[in-house]
Image 1: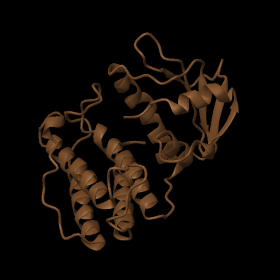
Image 2: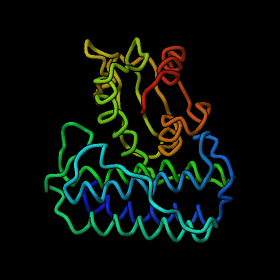
Image 3: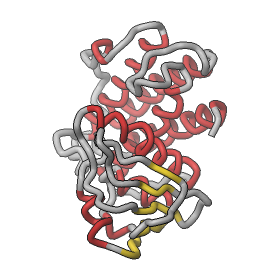
Length: 248
């Protein structure tokens, strides 16, 4: 996906998150984020978007994050409108900037504005799933967006977690191969620095994870049970990997 595609995906994601929020009970617990109700979930995503806007304006680091802003009247329609306003403001800021312009982010590598449309697309999609789960409604994303989310998890979050000493449990290569888009990743056992490197060469892979890209994406973000994924080959190796920590 290029920057224009990410921006279009952010626009869709903002609208979907607002729609889900508008139909949810703000007091409903979020099963995938058990410390939050839906209102807290919305506040979290608003806080993330507000933080991104400060980073685009030149702030740096996690210290720039502040969620002490005033919340609106506690009703689904008001919270949905509040979220939509903030989400659309962030989208406007992202759209107004060149993706190659410098901007701090936590990847440690791609310190440009172009990091953020992708990250926000995936941030919103995961939390829209959370909101939909609390509202007892179905939620899935397009295969291209889901595949991008899997790629981000493996190639951006994987190295970042390795720097913190967190590595997945993986004793042999496994392949992640969505059934509805022509892309795959083979994850290798963690090396000396704890990073599970990724390749497109499945030689030596002992197991394959197969299913719709959206199901794999949300399962790997611990949002769906792993029985939504078909595992062939060495199921013990794959199960140990899925049971270990792979995301923040």
